[in-house]
Length: 190
Length: 109
Image 1: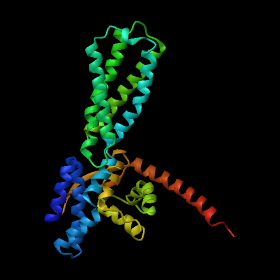
Image 2 (image 1 turned 90 degrees about the horizontal axis):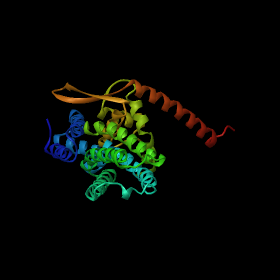
Image 3 (image 1 turned 120 degrees about the vertical axis):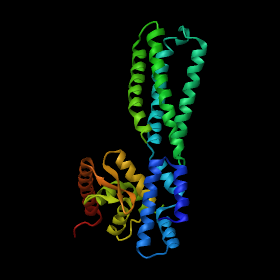
Image 4 (image 1 turned 60 degrees about the vertical axis):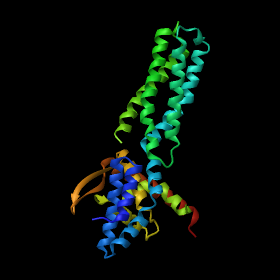
């Protein structure tokens, strides 16, 4: 029991949102529609009333996007960026890390992956109307895990000595590995 | 957004939890409870209730379940024990805050 107007809106929900969320919202819209039908309103009018009460598609998608777990996680992970950068800069610059035996291609690859990760997180964190964009955090998180793990491994394998600054930077990256690993399943589940 | 709507947004979580205090409700009934309980002053677009319920669900304060009724699947929401505790805390905090504001705005003669 539905109307073309409701069906059109539900199609929009499914286009803009993951299926479980779209189903949930569609259920709410159908409930509103049935409520108006039960009150004796004609089909067309009931559909119009339900849609008016429900809110514009853009508003509803925007609200889901604002509260998306991927968006919140991206903001948290981005916030760790400057701290991680500072820790590693304080550890690597005095340690003259450019003299370590790390191939130039590996350095370039690391830099490119770091930029890509930051760009993905930034896109997810700043999304206002696209729920799908908030899911970029799911792609960025494994990259961030790999970057942190690589940084810690590089210290273990290539650093001539473990200075206190290197230990702090590695500890920060290890903490972020734990946090990212905790966040990741919560993103993929939704 | 009207100033009242802005203020309401800050208390939406508590109001949603309160609307579920007496038992499980469908999302549309939650919206109705908010509207009727506030003499139609809190009449949010229904579509914005669901993202908020989902967030409360992710926080473990509300649990949503699908059930077959009237020939189709419907989702109902209910408070979890953590949701009840949060509601009790929010209610106590609101009473403190409201009595302090009242004491200032309407001092005893």
